[in-house]
Length: 402
Image 1: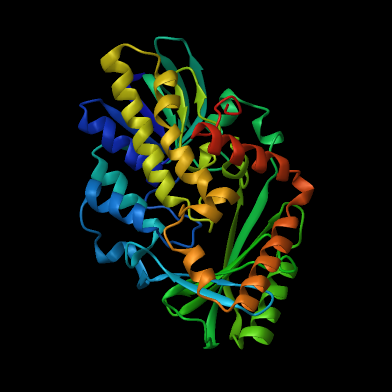
Image 2 (image 1 turned 135 degrees about the vertical axis):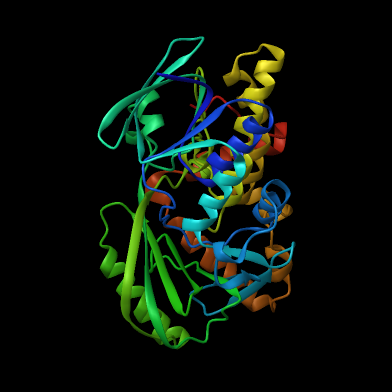
């Protein structure tokens, strides 16, 4: 049995950020990754300016080999059923288009942690002053003894399953799939990430250029038909935006815990086990989860360091520190913050006000129709209640966190 200070499950960007903090503080840290590295990661790859700054400040300049082509994204374009489109540049300038297979591997190596790939997390036992982690490496059972565990293993987190077995029955699940098409003709500006607020197409639809092909992505509640949703999107793009593509040459998809950021239903762990990144529920409004994964991962690492320095329970320290990231992420879904603040990294209110008043009315009507799509999940009252609490007390309540 190997004894270390920190075990991080998942060679993700969240895991790399957490490891960077703990390793820099002199804590012996091991990252467990179930797949051989570098490993594939389902992701659009468009990083926010905030995430870009974090990578540069903590890991150094980004090498060309960890980027897709086009290598940079200028901003986002919102498209509405009324055929009004709004393009918005990022406040921080252009941002990188990460190739997650190589960017994540680059970051975990730069963290300085010891990496054990092809090693699957199986279970854990928290004994109060230490945690026993059970894992499997190439068919063989292995154990680790550690002071703390950080679960950075994505939406379907096995670490969460170990400490909250019923959690995954308590939230709605979505499937996010994307297909890659060779381009015949695509008028969509390749410098932007394109997003459609159209309830007839589904809960989440996007497109952008990657390596000479066009990604057509769609997100929908579990149980819907992916190919039908995708074909509807293709038909819509051809009819409304004159996008003409060859049949898909490749596709990929994954399950997503879409919702915790909207209704403040995050899961941060128990005892000596911390949950971070998208496993915890962090997801920005346009579906970009890399920036909040990096920052929440770093906070998890910092919480372990602070708890050790001040002899405090690590869970108490983490929940106190993570509030800043909760505010930043949940503000992006908060209707009051969207209307009266600037929670995003592109100026939607200014772009909306720049439209003729008739187009503004169309956009607001279209957005309302899109929001109604989520009525079946009964999130409306929860979102409104959290928005008012944020206004009154300046933060989101933590009694809804696990």
